[in-house]
Image (cartoon, rainbow, N blue to C red; front, side):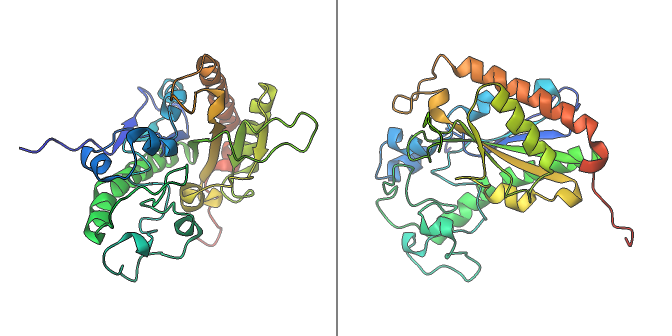
Length: 298
């Protein structure tokens, strides 16, 4: 009997749903299928360069604040759930792809489609071309369960509270980031992405920005990360669904070579707990503004 496949998604529910917030970590999965590692041209350490290592741990106290945490358990290098379901590079496959595939997106061109061609270090993942049947299997087994779980918790929050605030949690490499224009030239600590105000109420972004800045973090908005598929696809402020993407510089909490947690990990996790409390307080004070605004003609 073949070994059971690892589950694709884990939803950590609060004992009591006290908050309209939902937290999601689409890129922290680290359960690497054995057959995937065996088929790759890269070793496991190199494959892990694309991982948002430990982001799910950094936000793991969300259920204690009454908010669910949705975690993708399989790695981004295997399948990226923060993409359209069929953003695929034709050059990676052994037969022509069907017309419904989006082969022309900027993410595909960068090698980072739903099934990525490269890891973060820009090295090619696969020795051989893939079959489209394999792509469909991964989409069915990993992509669809993740988004079914995410949609379910968003809908429950909106039904219970009148609106939902989804925080899409990510990390970013410490190298290759834009530098500050002022004198200290420190690299960025945290990037908040709200698609230039389109994916969530401005007060949510303001609250996150002000809270993190007050804790000493260097925060910018929408540059270089304005929000990915999740932010664009689910963000619907007039429909009562607000999505903010949070990108955290990995150097704040881990060694990017050894994948070890830095001593500052616990402090960052504590600060993110403070952020959760501040966002929850904001949500409690602006219920009317954040709720689905039904048109009078409906």
